[in-house]
Length: 392
Image (tube, rainbow, N blue to C red):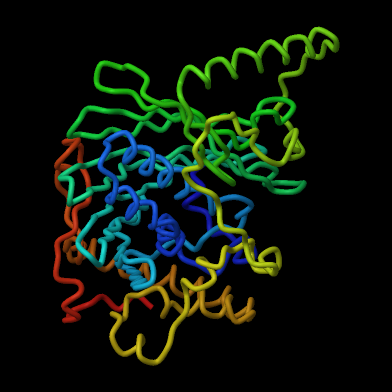
């Protein structure tokens, strides 16, 4: 079933557009600045890996669906305190593709990519595979890193408590040195033993393991010497097998309830170095769609901002704003109106055979991987906005 074509009731949403949700990749930008400041390539890769893991951490318990961006919708965020500015645009509607471009305010990095969240419906769960490449360039080192994000799955969409897991392999490549970091996001497994776990290795271009990484994408990431890690794994496996032989159980069903992890936190192997730790969520987060403090500030709009942002910015989108203000019926009506307006505009374009032109991004080969990508065309921050589409 193609879920993107069904109009979902607004009650399943959270009051953010997917363009804003994407921006949450930037919450731990300090890891990019830290990577820039390090002289060893392996240490830089550790920070980049920590950034890649931290970028998906805000998904934890975020079971509200972000609003689908309208074609031509944009979002910008400038965070002087975190040292970056970001721009994103919905560049395609079928399939839905969101492109973004972020840069360090001290010209120390560029982070860009495009995401096409491919949805699969599995009866009890929905799987979103975020197709698209992430590219991070550390300008002072003239280095580029690329990776793709793990698959995200929301369980119990029909009945029961919704819960989220992420799984799949993420391979980060340093295109200058040939070093790779291969991370495995573990599926939950039967007794929830593996829930949220991430582990993997950084290896040089001849595949020699330089260091091991482990942790949970919901809380932290550590690095340790590979030999120490393997000895720990071996020992852990032995203990698990002894436990298993004492109680034989076989079951391959997908777990219904979100399994409770054995112990909330990660066992820290002696000699490990902490690379990243999650910022605790604000105390009222559970009543606020499980938002982080970073997410809560994304739709903030003040008079000064309103006078400079383009009219396509999602802060000005009426259905999301109504939902944020608690006006659910109005949000629902507005969402319907906007989707209808988008359909009419598409019909009119096909009648006059004119093609939709993206404004801030264009298609082209990724300079490092050669695959098709959406590249920033420039000039957004000149604040010279004319001929913008009327989408709201």
